Every structure is written in structure tokens, then in C-alpha cells.
Image (cartoon, rainbow, N blue to C red; front, side, top):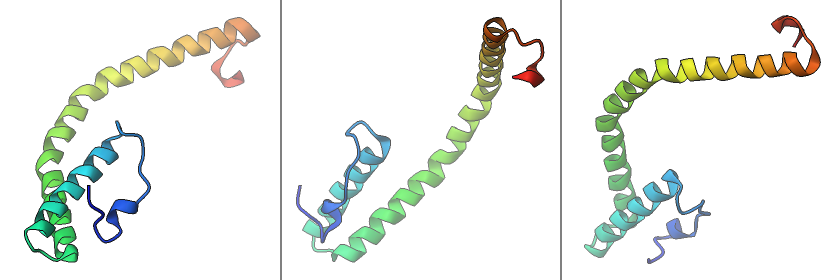
Length: 100
């Protein structure tokens, strides 16, 4: 991949990181625009605009998914917390949660 006016020199994270994938996609898109003759700063603006449009279109689905998953996640968290509290009580001999 070509270096885009310093954009390609940014420090990168692990290759399986979501941010890394987004970063690579933006660089590829910017490079395509630059190869077609668009100035680098305009290509960066176009990539940022496309990214924001993508976020705007996907946010409702993500929110709905989180709203569906929240009750189950809370139940699991509360169960794990109760289990941990029981283990602490068993190990340290504490009688109430206020003593923990």
C-alpha cells in the first residue's frame, strides 16, 4: 500500500482489531480516490464523510441488538456476582455483602 501524505505512517494496532480494519478500509478508499486524481485532503474528507454515513446507517441496528441482549447480559452478570460473593464468604467467613 502506498503512503498517503503521512496517513500510512500512523502507529497500528493488532491486525484483528476493529479499528485496524476500519483504518485499512479508509486507506484503500482514499488511495483509490487519489489514484483517480483527487487531492489527498479531499480524499480524506470524502473517506471521513463515508465513514460517518456508515455509522449513521448502522447505529439503529446496533442499538436494537444491544437492547435485546442487555437483559440476558445483566442476568449473567448478577449470577456471576452472586457466585463470586458466595466464594468470598466461603473463603473469608464473611456474613454480609457489606463486609466484603
